[in-house]
Amino acid sequence: MGQSKPIGTKIILIVEDEAIIRFDLVDYFLDAGWRVFDVPNAERAIAVLEERTDIRVVLTDVQMPGEMDGIRLAHYVRDRYPPTVLFVMSGAVPIRKEELPARAMFLPKPYDPQRLLRLVEAEVH
Image 1 (cartoon, rainbow, N blue to C red):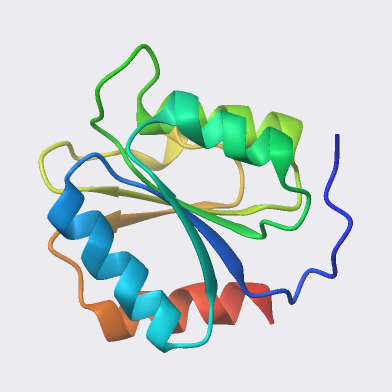
Image 2: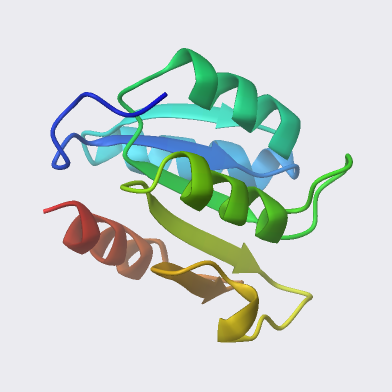
């Protein structure tokens, strides 16, 4: 399954188990004109990606409940949906570049939402 919408489409999937952080990210991206899907874990993220062909960006936390963490999710997304823009965030676990799939960006928490939005938008335009 691949994506069918143009790369510039502003649709993001936010994968974050901490509800307050996830809701803040959702609100911030909605206010910036994005269409947003949000889920609390990798398994639900995969289900959304299988249903949607228009998601261009996946923003995921590293540590989440379930069998798959954010790094494994990022590799899954890169293998299955190669054009997807990937951002991996963590406030507790330092991530080495070689742990991430190709063309994925690591963002430490706490993050500046304005900087995050600029980085994401720069990758989809």
